[in-house]
Image (cartoon, rainbow, N blue to C red; front, side, top):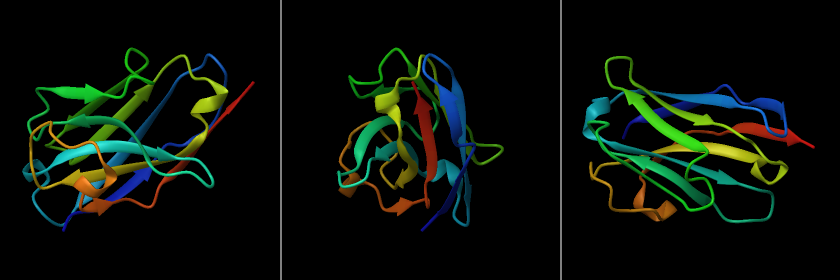
Length: 125
């Protein structure tokens, strides 16, 4: 399995922007499709975005399409989530995840086999 570590979370005002990052280590990074999820206290993990192993294609949840952008740099073993026009309801712990299937299929948390420990994003009103 690949090991993942998120960074870059914090507090931002509503309408602001934030870019969070995730670094992979261990197994070859480009073997995996990568995704971002978030979780609020007492709720399940919500799919946000997924990017192919090569980075040439991505898919998004309706709730974030047009506001969030996923990208990756395989040479740096990094995946990013750029978030714009943030809303208080975007407040959650954000997780990156890796799927050994490298395409775009799979948006359930059970489709992903490796997870980071999460980074808190808080959007104040």
